[in-house]
Image 1 (tube, rainbow, N blue to C red):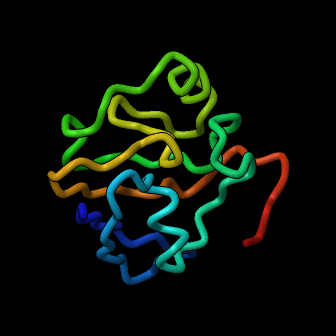
Image 2 (spheres, rainbow, N blue to C red):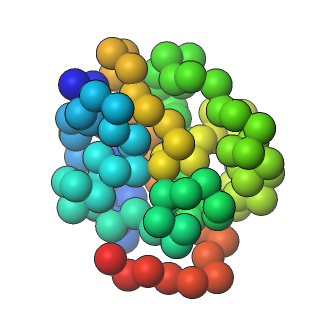
Image 3 (cartoon, rainbow, N blue to C red):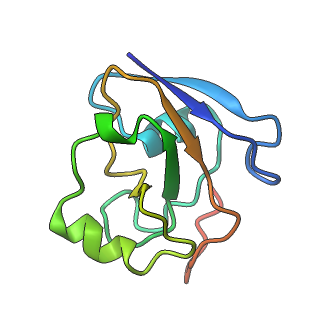
Length: 112
């Protein structure tokens, strides 16, 4: 299990959260399982940017993004050097601290 610290987000997670990700579980899946309603318009298939997060700590412990994820990230609002699509980022043993950006480019809202 990996520990994920989610920084406070005004709408989705006002108090912040500490999650445990199962082995092989993405950051997005862990957030959704723990009740953080992170947008994921493509159902976690790496076809949009709605689950974009910024990894504030532990970024180097993640496997590098593949070419498809890099191409999608180029379209994300508020892109930073340590941005990832949370549906593609699988935590390792090191703790991650992630920030959910205030905005997302979303043509369809899933409202899960």
